[in-house]
Length: 411
Ligand SMILES: *[C@@H]1O[C@H](CO)[C@@H](O)[C@H](O)[C@H]1NC(C)=O
Image (cartoon, rainbow, N blue to C red; front, top):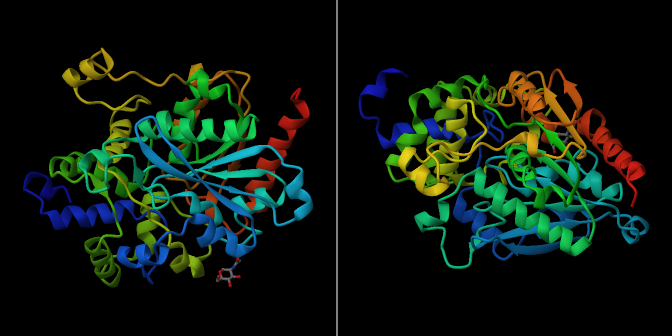
């Protein structure tokens, strides 16, 4: 691998490596990703509600919000199948998915296994977030996905524009403080957003699955190799703005890769850590939804965090930083700004190669509050949303935490 750093790597080689890297959702030997044109045709005018949530018998409404920088995001509101529960609306919970995923991630298994369904069945008013660029949030008031400007963002914008717009919308609709659940990049976004008082004022409590803010101790071997090779900078230099692994080329490469010498099961492990508990026979179904697109700049920002060990805004380089931020270095997100009074709950896994324990310790050190922690020794990064035992292992615990808020709060 080191060898081709010095020579000019071909586009195909880079695509191949990227495909490896980003195919974090689920991969087995039987890879069968429907291609993009297929998906688009099938999904014409149909949102996430109609695709995945209503067919399971849950009332679901589509909402759309525009961010301050013009992106049009889809949000879904899901309630219980039980009519009685539906009338006494519980606290709003906003679910914020991770990288290369979207709101569908919370509904991929059965009603008894998936957090989105479980929360609705327990009387919570469930709101499903989808960040810009994903299948359910693909609009902009003036730009098209073909424009490179459409992809000019990282998780910083996802935190400060997308999450902010979604929280504002949920708050103004429900007039109630919001409970947040984030997974992976959804926790980066939430932690960054919660350092802003105008956001934390609207949030009642937060539950984080695989919490990430610092990334210096990431252990996933394949990710580390990419970082050291500066793949992120290469693709930016090549003028690739969108990372989309449903493109024909991506699928082709993946297909041949998985038929060849690389075993795809190990591929997922070398990115996310060893997952104990997701349902292997549902992988083809998962692949109808994941992976979703993201931007090259976002990848670059995440890799900057791994290289520098900081939880800071995007680094444009000294001169442009000066123009953007008025200082040479990008400003850090100060976790100490998250109010001590905001209750936080975190779950982390012993086999998670992305949300590392040492990095999490750093997060805990910088927070003013003392979050409640749940440690699951066998869990890898994907298990936290796809485990067949998720309800018993994690989600019952989240609901207990959220209910304890209700009892202790004054309203
Ligand atoms: C795994 O998925 C298959 C196919 O959807 C299903 O029949 C089976 O019951 C699932 N297993 C578990 C443990 O949920």
